[in-house]
Length: 135
Image (cartoon, rainbow, N blue to C red; front, side, top):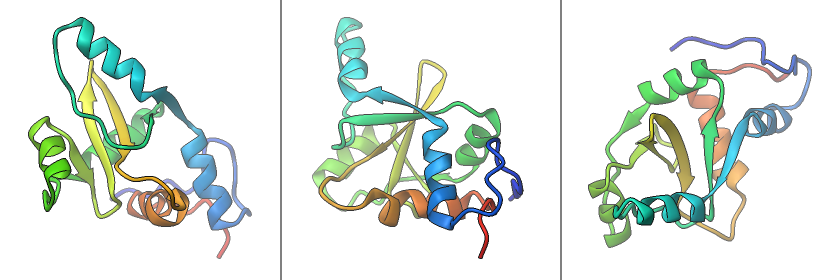
C-alpha cells in the first residue's frame, strides 16, 4: 500500500480527526435518492445502503487505493446479502460499502445514529495509509 504523506490540502500538523475530516470533505456527496431515481428511470433496481448520502472520491489516487481494498461483504443479514448480490463490496474492514456506478466509485454506509468518523471514516483513513496528521 502506498502512503500519501501530504494531503491535497496541505494538512500536515493537524489532528488525526481533522485529517480524516479533510479526506471525507474531498469526496463529492450524492443524495441516494438521485441514484435511486436514475436506476428507476433505466428500469434497474439498485439497493442502497441505509444512510441517505453516498460519497464519490474525486481524487483518482483515492479511487485506485480504495478499489485495491475491496472485498466481499460479510453477508450476515438479509440487508447485507441484498447489497452484496447487487454488487456492493466492503472497503477493507471499514464498514463502508462501495460499488461502481456509471464508471464512478460510490461509497455508502449501511447504518445511522452513531458517529461515522469513529466507526467508518477513521478506519478508511488508516486503511489508505495516509499520514496527514501529527501523532
